[in-house]
Image (cartoon, rainbow, N blue to C red):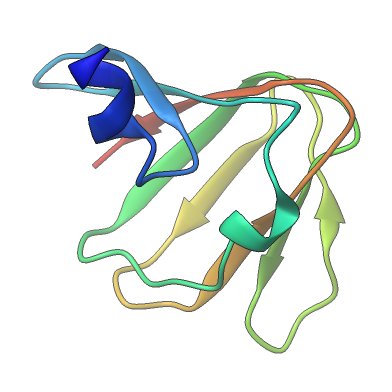
Amino acid sequence: MLLNLITMSKPYIDIEVTDKYIIREFNENIDPIELMWHRDLKFRKVTVLEGEGWKFQMDNQLPLELKKGDIIFIHAYEWHRTIKGNTALKIKIEE
């Protein structure tokens, strides 16, 4: 139960963490308000592993629909957000 309390502060759970990548999942029941605009401290390569109806948006750009196999490059300190879809979203993050 303590683990659930810790992860509730973030809109995702990290399923697998290694020194090379993170497998992260966003639940399909997430409240869209939890998916806020944010910036990351490091450059990231994000690969979509699963998910339907999800979108990704960079600052001053229109949202792009995410599909399995898509790869997104996010530079450090770039504003971006994820927009909720219909199923769970699973991604692989490499920094």
